Length: 382
Image (cartoon, rainbow, N blue to C red; front, side):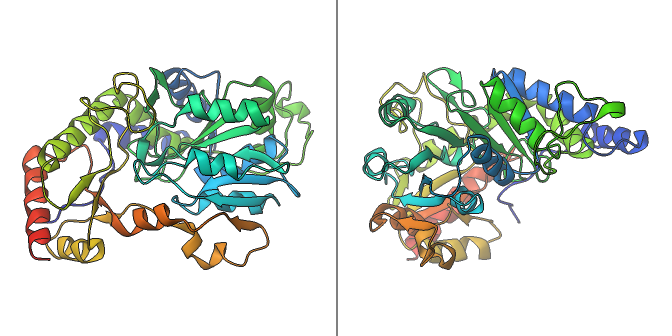
């Protein structure tokens, strides 16, 4: 029996949508992409929504829109995918890396505030694995120091903070549409903002710097230096087909996560990293009825993670690390545009102990029971 870590939700309906685009001959960004943007804008409850080539290019575009560059500092968490920090040096700014909380793997707000200097212009906190950030604390920091917040919400479509969907709390929010996400276009990203001026600048930037407010094919005018970060109609067709089922897909993920929590709650050697309906929110101090985790990943903490991971894979169950501890990688060491603040003890601990379990729409409760049994057997053999 082989159980994958993820399995994209691809139906015949979605395949038909892609064939319609192929038959139309209009393969680049066009009306299908626009419909995808509008549908996501409606779902997220935001004013502006732009589809781009990836979350990474979306983060870069967000920094440029906020005029972050040479001489500026951008604070990011250590426990995240490299793209979160890499985008700062890409625009000429310094990435200031701080530790995370061991409790929830999100940025340590005390460490964040301690790292702020007169050069700090922006913060890129990560709503890791779909866990909403504490915007009560973040907005207090933002207002006190006059900073911008760009949320790396790569994993967090459908997550909520105090009843409001992630996507409108930050100055700019960036989502991923990578196949690890339950709404995917293969590669791609979504950028949201409530600010009209920022939205217009980013829309121009992703269209080669074209004036998008009054331009026509007969009178195109390029008002800025820009690039091509457009999401194609082909990719958007895949995403549109999934958006037709987004509420059901999200509900299923939460159901599967609750199953895992029930099965693993009293297992010796397993520490749960997410909150359940009966517990205090792990992201902030509110009731979990006010916050919603979107569970892009269901992860646990275990001892001897690498051995357990090998054992599970040998049994045909694809498990994975959580994510990376950036300070451990050459790209972020001895780099003049990277500053590592502290020992990163919590980030390193999370990296060494987090294990991601299979989670996808077709996963059944029986398969989950099998996964948990094999996990317990692997733990017992340690």
